Image (cartoon, rainbow, N blue to C red; front, side):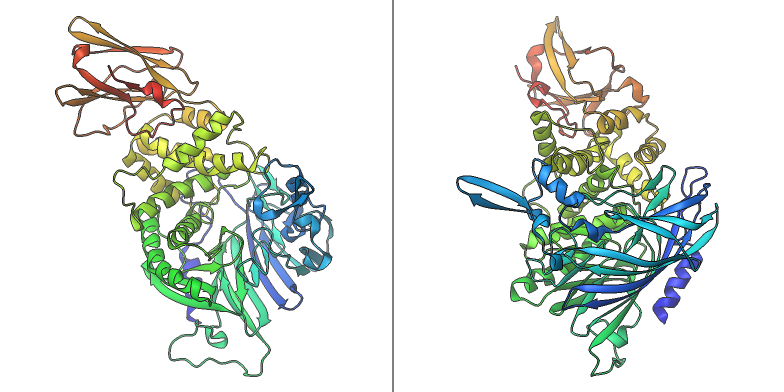
Length: 629
């Protein structure tokens, strides 16, 4: 009862309200979908049945005559689009294929293509009604297309009801049963989920490879399952003392019939756009308190090989929450669960499912990354399908910094983003890069998607720190979260936030880095002595422009820096080397490919000269960035 009251108070105070007031965009709107579901899971057949009632509010200026639902489990059937993609992409996900020898030839085949009928996934819909009236609907792969019984006018709400029957597939990707680590149920993308409708229209993307986009709403979910099973996932458990399993309030007797074969778990989750859970009869369940009275729950297999690392993980998760609260913004929920399950690591509302058979550093690392997604995917919620680099890249950036804070490297002066830069340079050298505007399902290779979304997306932020200054970048991230949480920001929203914070003009940065495959390449073309002075000529070789930092070290042991502003930025970056004397030179405009300036010392006095000593500028050829006599 206390938790229900608590959630009601949060809703009344507007913490989880639609973010119209703070969002800087005039006329911003978003849809809203409140779910009530009752589900019965048969742990012997891995089939489940359920009823769903969904109250849908049309906050758009448009009259809607159709709606669309995602039926994600249907992807795990032979002949699905996901199956077809595995057969045609050059480098299919290794978790989703199996290889065998046929004579001297190695054959790779989709694991989905060989699923037997009782091993596939499906979600079947029946009895679909709108306000009690039948609504025509058809299934197209992983999408349910519904023609409404009556249109939904702007500002109006309507209630949909339906029955569904699902089957949990063998664990192939993300959702499934009987994982390699023996987790019984990883229940992700498991229910009929309303597709997003926004200023760009419907986002009823088929489930082919990856990434999601969802509508915020309040979830009320009851799950009936064998009493020996423990559930961890999204939401606040409402009936702790009926369930037990380590949830119960201290000093209060657990109340459930001893002869009961099943238990019903009742969860409530306010203002989330997804609902996931894991279940197993051998879960250990620990809970520790984090900052702001946030309960951190841990569910992992009762196995000696997991216990030590999962226990050590718990205080580190507290540190991670503190780090993200400080460097992004306060986590608004009072619960987060780290659940062993799935096939790697994947973020969900108020929880993550991760594989648990890992070394300690890897376990902390995957938790850091998936937990950070709570801010970038589940609170800022950019469209992952269209702007996957914002979610994955920004998450990678902040989680790499967090890892350096909670598990610092033993080496000095470690660049936490070095791996991202190395991956990006590898992709560029391969000559197959696609722009970051590429839809997540449209990359020619999984490798290209991974490097683009995670690494090039991470460099977008790390390099922006080079462009506008680290302090301005830190302020930008916090303001972006403050202004856009519980809305669906776009890349332009982020770059405009950076402009508001710094005062710089940055449209060129978003254009070149995210919308093209233009590269950065600057060189020290020549160093010539002119009397008692030295003339330096720089060259822009790559298409993408940048402001330039140069450090010069002299034979007498002194150093100084030179800064060349980029004319189109209309901006002067704060001195990144406050201990060095800095000379701000005249602006360099893009069309002129060379630039000259003079140092008032002879050439013989120069020991070494370097463009961007921090190596945060993603210059694809660093050999020509350095001058030594």
